[in-house]
Image (cartoon, rainbow, N blue to C red; front, top):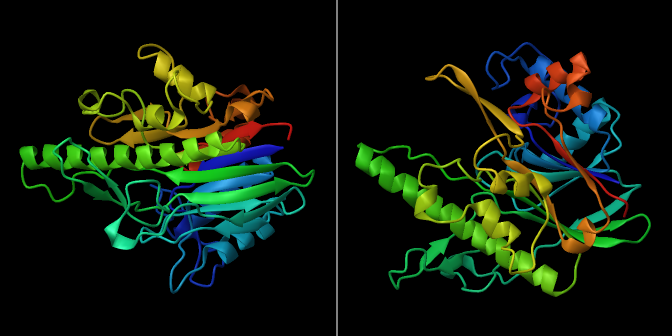
Length: 341
């Protein structure tokens, strides 16, 4: 079975309000890329992945006027994908949903959120991801109330062969300090936003621990937008979101070899799953942002992880059509896990 995670930049811009694809020459939202070019590139990438399930990060909008599931299923039908059904969890206000595309002949899935519904009052334990998490972030003896701008998608899944497992799709992001009136204010906002992201990572980690304690098989995947060396304020907090979610060596943890390699090698070559152009510096920055972390029982099955990087992966680089499509389709590249379950 092949499981994938893929952050598709500006996916929402490729559909009209009825969920139909906009095959035209209008701009997609990606720099100098038309909607038709991005749609065709995505068709090539999704077809090459041929995955049983894809956790789509930044999926089309779910709102009063738009629907995520019809849009993704229209996309799947247009390119005759096996992963032709879609599932979305809690909607958010960012026009960037977290959704699962899957092959109904390979998997049965349902949205299955865990935890207490708290509303704005919050809870100290492990509340539901569309609720409020109470935690003291800065040891000032005063609790902060934290929410997800993009609540993680929790899924109960079962393979056609009867294997049950859990999936969590996540998109953590530390907001840029927009609206800052001075360098000092920008620094304060940046630190505050990073603290909030780390609190979200702690919230996710507690949910992971609950599943591991119950002996459940678990896959956590998506864009964690964090890792060693990616933030100038990292040393203020000691650990990145990735380290918090995976767990330390002294506690039951999740496994992702790309994440482990990145954490162990502060200098030298590390894997990357995203590529951004820095206009001020006139160069590209590569970063490891996308992960598929699995519980120890799944890791024991010796799965194969792969980042579909157009230059670093020989299979992608050796196919000019796929290489070009990956560069046009998104600023992130897919990550896959091949596993016998």
